[in-house]
Amino acid sequence: MNTATTAIDANLVTELISVRDRAYAPYSNHPVGALVESEGGTRYAGANVETAHYKGICAEASAIAAMVSAGERRLQRVYVIGPGEHLCTPCGDCRQRIREFATVDTRILVLDAQGRLLREYDMEALLPDAFGPENLGKR
Image (tube, rainbow, N blue to C red):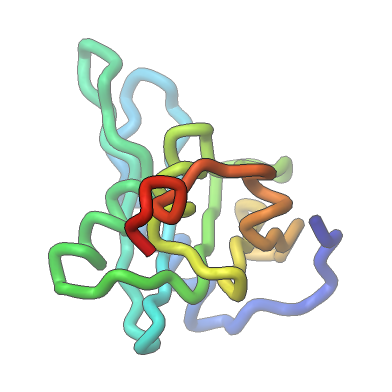
């Protein structure tokens, strides 16, 4: 886990804030946006979508689903932006989802509400000793 000092591209920040602002979070009032960048460099956006029975979908899951639906399978970068100044890291389920499509080079970047990079993780730091496809002989 790195404490980040690198600036994030302004266009990417604008895109992240825009997708976060489209989140549907009437119960938690905690909108989250995510962008995943595939191995080919294409970006896919996702926002959290809550439901009355509290079984919503996270922003990261939404963005990964868009990437997979487009036929891509490898994550280069994952960007996550929440509504505040504190870390809004992926939940446990999303860490496992990211792991499914990550490589050792995948980077997960967590931004504050204004788009300043707070932390950058590699997969091992985000989900140490993770169970993945290779544990099932699939990679």
